Image 1: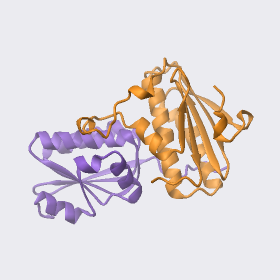
Image 2: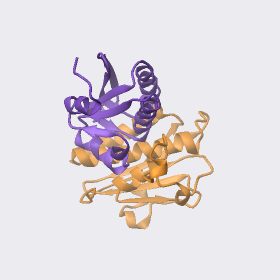
Image 3: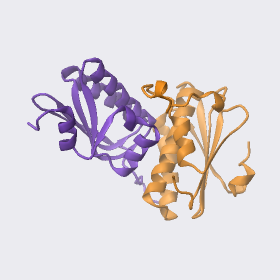
Image 4: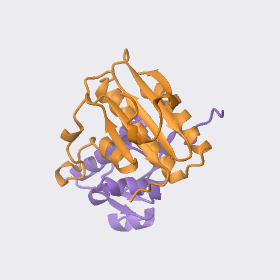
Length: 124
Length: 148
């Protein structure tokens, strides 16, 4: 039997700070075992900007713990007069957002460019 | 509680693992189940849904059932064949009543950080059953069953 799991359990978070917004790219799996780190990193970003794009184009899996971290970041951005958008979610992750109705709470866009237009920010 | 009779498998067919009450320890039986699903040729979408439901059940057992008590354990039983996957997760807690869990898709609950696990299990699995106490959940996924 192979020792390798069929899904990666790792999560990499990359933050790109722009002039007036931040792009946070999640790569891998946003499961419960990474939530403390994810919440901490999203909290730090939300402390520095109130316009945030979550790039989920390389996120292969999310569960309710991952959703909770995104909701917490959404609330922080909104409470500071800003906005959080989701960009590029793959079908599996997008389906979870639809089922839980979070696509009604948080704007979801096909890619970062569309999310930037929604936020009214430039790419640089 | 034995496997529900309408799940289509005999109790003696299930494998069993008992692990300490933490998410890291629960990864090993989770990986065994996922590898069985791959070996039986389940597609990516179905494996995604079963992984999601299983992780929700494990999280509920560890955090809510056993209240993160590291002296406690969780029991996982499972069976996978090309037609169905059956998974059971049991904790040592007092259980809960699933009917009392608020609807997480209600407007007033959308911003709650948690409370979506049960609904996700029910959406992605063919059948979800609890024992009377509410500390043991049985999940069935039939292969032909597609998410609407």
